[in-house]
Image (cartoon, rainbow, N blue to C red; front, side, top):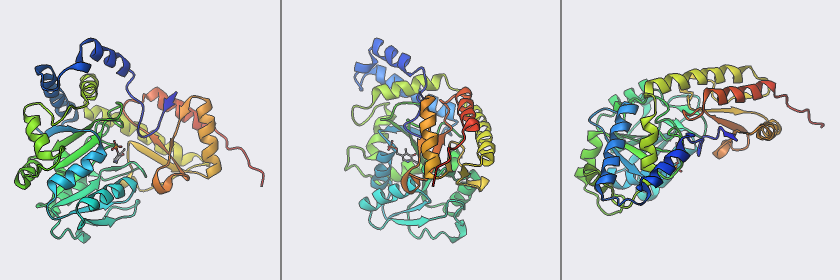
Length: 357
Ligand SMILES: *Cc1c(COP(=O)(O)O)cnc(C)c1O
């Protein structure tokens, strides 16, 4: 089976071998306070920075999921309120969780074919602006220049960017946000259960000045422990080990970015020319490069998924309000060019069956 599901998604084929290595080397049973674990932590942090081109001044820590990051951010970085700017289901979910923790939390919803007009955004006394860098539910992304402009307009607020389906797939404008995070089951090509959080010096300062220590996952504790290459609780050691091993074999993010962009362009041209599907997003400026969604009638969607499955191919369902009317194709690094071409061939040869009415 080849899966094009945008999460959980295809894992690197080396994963079983790395799991075996971890087992044989005793990594699965190591103490998380041991020098062996600390060395893995040190190395994985260095690899994330190196391979993803993270600025030196930024810090890498771990949590268990993007969803956990949503809560960590409200708990440990927000004192008055956060402002959430979103156009899809993941951004909305984040806002809902944030509101439970900080009721004054605000939102701005924008159209998925447009970018919010930054001059119209009133952030008042929000101490954090929350954006979804890559909205996995509808295949939109925020361009780097838009993010830089937001950064300039609100120099006093922290900016947090959910980059769950873009980190490790596209080159991120790191300096344009203070908190970036991603679960590893998307562009990192790993099994779920671990998230990478990347923090600016301003984010660390805010954590320290708020001094919030009331939770097992308070960011201040996570950060303090990470300074000693340790964690607040027994972490997903296997996940961290697999992250280290896969990053060791990875190309630089600029190469990965080039490869994914090229494949995205092929998809874009192909989907535009098929008469039985329609792109959801037609404005190039907001197209995600890593998640490509398209619309079709429910009949065509069924036929596509069924016939693909017969050929061992899984195409991703829609998500949220787009669940039944769209399909999504992951363009993630663990998927090979050959697999993408196999799926393209399938689309090229597909002919919807006529339904009798
Ligand atoms: C998948 C996804 C999440 C949720 O990830 P979990 O690991 O389930 O917490 C959050 N945000 C975005 C944008 C996602 O794509």
